[in-house]
Image 1 (cartoon, one colour):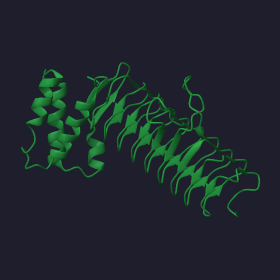
Image 2: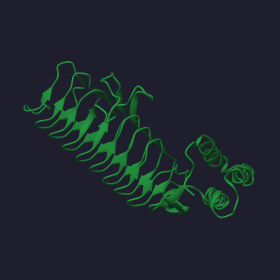
Image 3: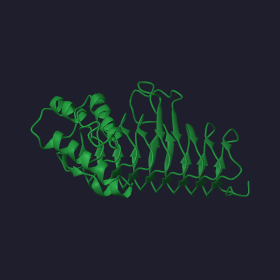
Image 4: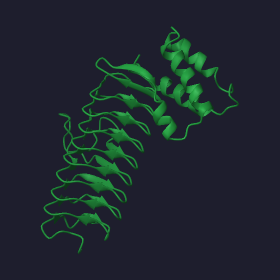
Length: 263
């Protein structure tokens, strides 16, 4: 208990590992579980049915696990689940889910969530993502892995953002963003392949070349989306199979899109 500031208020029913640090004037509710090595700064509120993994850092004035802002919410015991090694900066708000969806808001591992970000109910964030200051997710949004989202970007309800995508500053995301793409603007537009991000993640030149072909088939060929899907599928095996996983990633994303993709 030496790691708990004497002004912090922690419900006796909360489950905190002995190595958890809690700063001054923070409040932790009865249904909260926090694993080893996590640091809760001063003036943080963690409530609701919230489970937090190992080695996370929560900076001051964040609200974690509060009731969601869906008018249909009637206090059901929905959850917020946060993985390991995430950083949540100042004034972030992460809400629990709703029974109308999965009943759970989820954040994966190794995410960097900057100040003033909002994750509404039933949002699912993957791993290794960077959310710049002021990114706002409406409910039911799904984000893959290794995504970068520029500051002050707003994401409409039920949007999907694919792996390795890059969304520019102050974008308005009202359609699904396919994997590997760089998009920005209002209205949102696809600009290019996120080559810089792919190189940083050690994508080979061969894989990037195939992803460039995918981009051209979707955005520069004049194909309908259905025609582009057929042409993308035909890329499998053309490079000895090196990029087959990337082709499948794109095809699976397009097949699951119900709101249309940014074009």
